[in-house]
Image 1: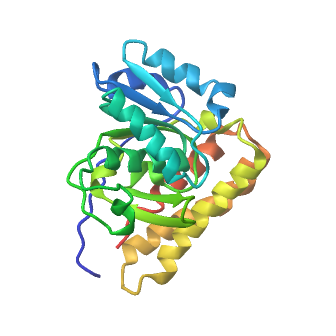
Image 2: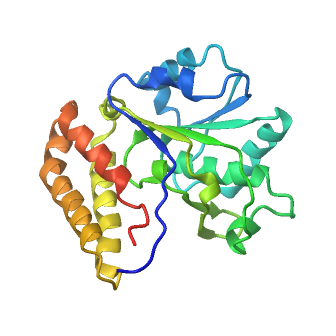
Amino acid sequence: MQNFVFQNPTRIVFGKGTIPQLRDLVPTGAPVLLLYGGGSIFKNGVHEQVTSSLQKHHIHEFGGITPNPLYETCLEALEVVRREKIEFLLSVGGGSVLDAAKFIAAAAHFADGDPWRIISEGDKLHSAIPVGAVLTLPATGSESNGNAVISRESTQEKLPFSSDKVYPVFSILDPETTFTLPRKQIRNGVIDAFVHVVEQYATYDTHSPVQDRVAEGVLQTLVEVGQTTLNEPENYEARAAYMWSATITPNRWP
């Protein structure tokens, strides 16, 4: 087994009815930017739950973050961050919204020119705005790691970056927020989680029996609950197992 350092500072708040805990998790008095995607959080009631939980906080909102989040959109959000002196970013949605939040958090403290250099040149981050998450689409595990992938439309690039500075401070995972997701998104999410585990399980050339058993357990769980959670959208136990499996998959198993 190789030498390694394992640290995952994200606080996971898991279970039904956990969104109201935002009132204690988000710093009081800090201007907050709520980031979201195409607007599904308005249809499923998550936006109302979030905003009602943060009535005593100073909230700004920025929507329209797309799957494969765009650098250009992130820069628009960055303007809001700087204009409103935002001190906390709250991602409400899936992994794409959270990836964008991580990049915006990093770019807000980047003082060496074009923030694209964080990705293209791997410039080291010394600090970032704190990020929190309310997850509504399990798939990539972005809610518990420091990884993100950003696309740049002008140059047709899609590049990853990673930093311990952009780990979410907390992530709220309520399986009930997934009940209204389209069947296609659940199918893709289960497969995405499965493939992430297989990638690490099959490609790390080292003797790591503990990590291997964890990976095998996650894979078996996804096989067991995948069809159920697809066919029974409001089966809480199946959705919970799927959501947790997707969260713990891409966490740097050595």
